[in-house]
Image (tube, rainbow, N blue to C red; front, side):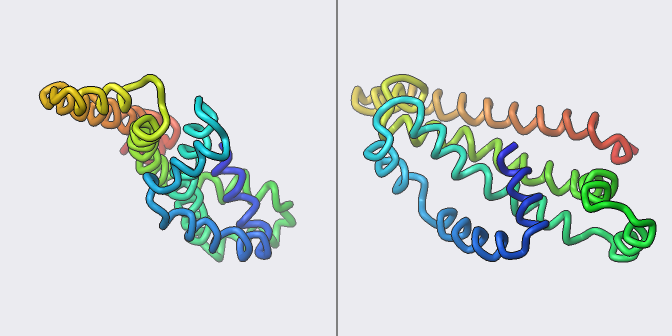
Length: 178
């Protein structure tokens, strides 16, 4: 939801896009494993640093995908909407959003996998419970079979999340079914 709102604002306000986009690119280039300890220092142990880290890593692909979808809107259709005196929110709701939905789902698919990976990484560096913590404990006890089982489990959960995105896409984007 945050990513969708940011993409709409960045598309509507060029100055906001010029301000935020470069910062997003810089944050996205910093490895998750480097950001996590800093967030734990700033926000303490608990769920908040995990949530912030997941937001930082998952919003970028969605924002970029939606903005890409907005850029691929047919210019002639935009002109037609303008000639029909459509308000900006009407152009957004009736034209830009439907056109950008496939792009949104492409970004969401990437973000879902990032979310699970980021959760495990954040648990490695500052968690008290979860699969990431269990993985670290297994490593310390030389239980490599358990470690690999956790890796496989996280992969399966991530794949299931991506499959849910696919299923959702089929129901939301009805014209893409055929």
